[in-house]
Amino acid sequence: MGEARGEIELEDNVLVIKRIRVVYHLVTPAADRDKVERAYALHAEHCPVFRSISTAIAITTDLDWGEQG
Image (cartoon, rainbow, N blue to C red):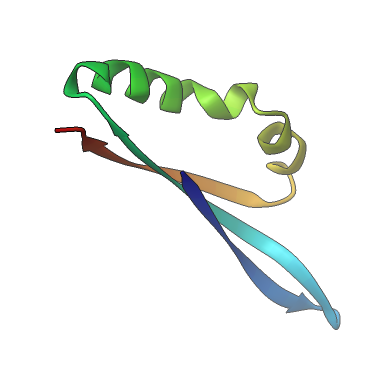
């Protein structure tokens, strides 16, 4: 599951998205931690949406990983 939050500012009387923060919430077995971290590290460069808008809007991502137990 993930959540995204955009930060909007008024620019010349127009609302403009300036920043987007995405947090991925994952719970996996402890043995999968390396796989999850590797996928997280590579995902942006392979994401069409990220690559399309990241030149115009600052995008940050965070991984909230928990061990399944």
